[in-house]
Length: 102
Image: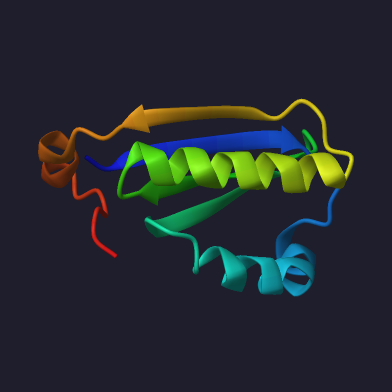
């Protein structure tokens, strides 16, 4: 069963195009994570928050990535990481055109 991983954390920036310039290598590496179907990057420059919403094939893959990413953020000095792993109701998501494929 597909699962959503939602992560948000305090982030001083950069945001927008500057974030793209700095984090493109990280984004490319994330594509190699086991079980990952896609990621939507999230940001709020006004609130100094960043994060993402990920779709994984299963909870095991999402949990493994969460552990890895949490450690990476901690190494960068990021505290206050908020994360949840939730099962996807694929039938209702399909009705509302949710992107479940690769």
